[in-house]
Image 1 (cartoon, rainbow, N blue to C red):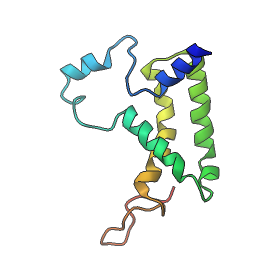
Image 2 (image 1 turned 90 degrees about the horizontal axis):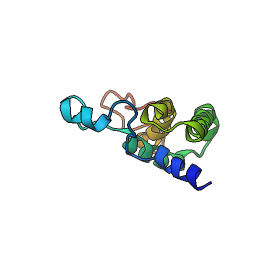
Image 3 (image 1 turned 180 degrees about the horizontal axis):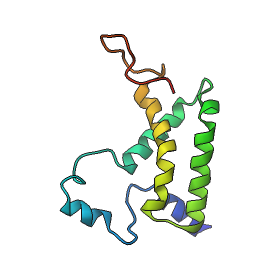
Image 4 (image 1 turned 180 degrees about the vertical axis):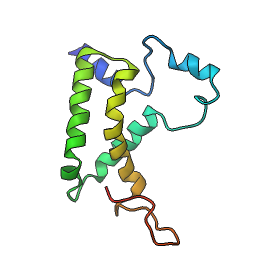
Length: 121
């Protein structure tokens, strides 16, 4: 049980556990990988914040994505734990991460043309 809890923590960790290629070594060699882009740790934090925005029927609409992310996490923790096996959970995490970015109303501030910056999720 302790090993499973440790692997669960590793699944949600910001650190990319290397398999055949060390991400941090490649990042030191490539200027593209050194760009300050949002990585899994940032997406995970935004998704955790997005769990608080699931009221008002949003949880029902996002249920397939949430169930997929939970099932993928369970299977990854049970069998494997490398960064590349966490990648299929990212689209569901991005849906959750969009909720706090869009704001409580579901739409970010409108532009001058009146079109929303982010669609309702």
